[in-house]
Image (cartoon, rainbow, N blue to C red; front, side, top):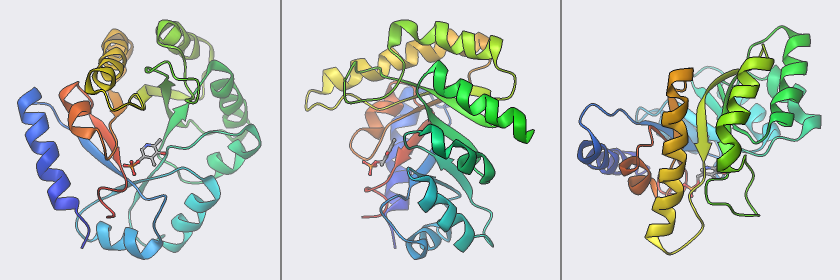
Length: 219
Ligand SMILES: *Cc1c(COP(=O)(O)O)cnc(C)c1O
């Protein structure tokens, strides 16, 4: 048994203290585990799983083909692997980290006649080691993608909380991303993907409606 039930209860508490109508979706980050462990968590009721390597995701998709799993891609996007990503049945790509990456996806999507669902990754903690658009450019970049690219479909934003022991710093990074998300909601943004095993309750308290949780579920 994984720890899904306990995680759901913790999210439930965090979302109720934020807003009783606030709904949070869990993406189980399954990158460290095998098909067998994914299947076990699936049978506990989990339907969305996230992978950060395209090759691994494709392999797991093939092995678990009989189950109606929703696959999310949460890893870095290399240009030479975009075709492979688009040929898979990925349901949401969280990690589009620049206009250029969106453009490369869009070009290939146009050739294949597909309309991939994507989020724009925001580097809301201003960390050099992290991918994503700088917060002060996020709204412009999002708008530019929406106005110029016709195959990618933007649904919102994704962010990784500050890598810090200081709760205030992590909270600030989440609130920055939530602010961007709210500014984009008139443009149709509905997903604010933030929060991992170490900080998902804080992320939900800051308005996240999609958490990506790995190690805390597959403990
Ligand atoms: C691995 C990963 C997660 C989940 O990390 P945990 O700390 O194991 O919960 C979330 N988001 C991204 C982008 C990841 O690569």
